[in-house]
Structures are given as structure tokens and as C-alpha cells.
Length: 107
Image (tube, rainbow, N blue to C red; front, top):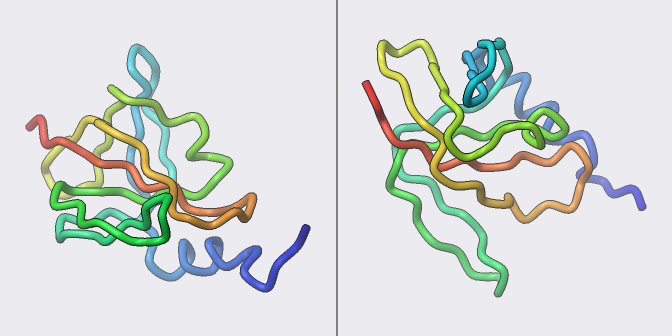
């Protein structure tokens, strides 16, 4: 089923996204595009409400996001590195939707 919102994540990724380095646990570093935020981010929950993530986050578009796992490394180019701690759905059913990853700073 298509929607007016299909493809919107790609537009947002093109405008707000930047190259970051993703390193799968035990794998090789790869450049991907994501929207990194250190400021708190509101995330939709399953009940239609929302909650606030106060840890750094990165939003990565599917299908790239499907390969990112807990424990993987993220280097957004700000002289800090992060580890993926949790995955949160963005609430969009689109095949190219963003997935929000909660990050913990490790260096």
C-alpha cells in the first residue's frame, strides 16, 4: 500500500542527514547517512502517545537501518564515538521510514 508519506524519509534524510561512520560489532566501518541529535527527541509509543529520549540518537532510513544492531559503533564526526543501545520505531509504516537508535557515548 502506498501513502502520501512514502519517500518522505528520503527527502528529510537528504536535507538533515549527514555522513556518519557505522561499525558493526566485529565488522568493518562503513559510511552511511543519518540524522544525529544530542538534544532530546520525542518518540511515538505503541499507544499513540510519545515519550522523550534524553540520550543522543541517530535516525537512519530503512533499509540501511535494518542492518544496524545493538552494540554497533557510530561516529558522527563530532570527535565522540557512540554505541547503539536501543532501537525505536518512528511510527511510520513506510518501507523507507526512519528508525531511531538510542546511543551511549563511549569516547
